[in-house]
Amino acid sequence: MNIKLAENFRAVFYAPFYATHALGLFAKEGVSITLLDSPSPGAGIAELAQGNIDVMWGGPLRVITERDQHPRTGTSLVAFCEVAARDPFFLVGRADPRHFQLSDLQHLKLACVSEVPTPWLCLQEDLRDVGVDPKAIALIDDRLMQENVRALLKGEIDVAQLFEPFVSQALAQGAGQVLQAASARGYTAYTTFISTVDGMQRNREAFQAMVRAIEQFGPWLQAHGPEELARVVAPFYPDLTQEVLASAMTRYQLAGLWSCRREISRAGFARLGKSMFHSGFVSRLPHYEDCIADCAYE
Image 1 (cartoon, rainbow, N blue to C red):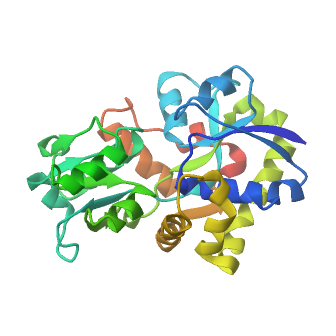
Image 2 (cartoon, helix red, strand yellow):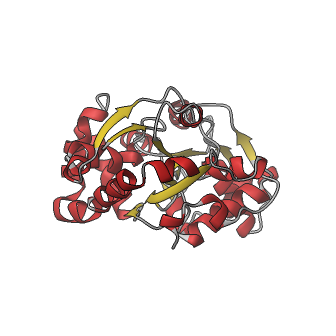
Image 3 (cartoon, helix red, strand yellow):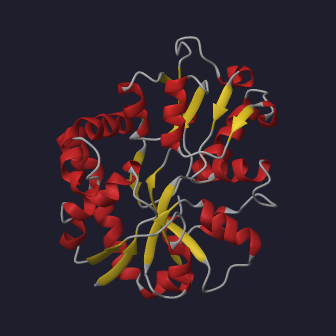
């Protein structure tokens, strides 16, 4: 069984996909994976539509957005196999983390993530939950995360929304401390495999084998730990030191980020859908069964 798999973009929190590949777990289940780069977040969607790839990984946000705009057909996107079940982003700043509350952001200058939409959409819902209008935030939304780390160091902003490795790098440089982990809100459907309705039928046996391989990652991580995970996936992150990579993997394991299971959480899907709808990103709340492959129902 030969499958063309496209990554969404190169990110540390995608480590389970790289580890499963590097450890030979896909091959053990009888699947030969051709791992393809994606030039930008979400670019794999067009490749799926053109039939150039069989499956990609990424956020269910892509599926929800498509379903909001178009009815479900054979060429429609569907999500299956939950890998990142919680939000991988953190707020980093110079405030005292012992006393920091999300409502404090209305008095601080915040730089949110600009590279992808999901982190800020989800943070907006968190703010609404504590009675803060996101429009009241002094927001910088047009800079890259690495630029925001530098801005923290210079004192140009108070708080930056970051994922790893930028969190570990910011802390190592003395740019601030972790004030809040978005994973603490609970389940948020963040990363899954994505294919098409027709693709699910065409590659059913291979996709089931891929799911079985991914499900082996959790037990492997429990047995070997985050430092060994950092060593296994290090070739995928040539610009990161082993120390930073191990710090990132440890932080994500402690956050309970990775579920790596067949089913996609209904609660996590609902949370993502609410965040998108209340922020005006989609016109209506999404339906779970309309966006999730039937083999991945919880």
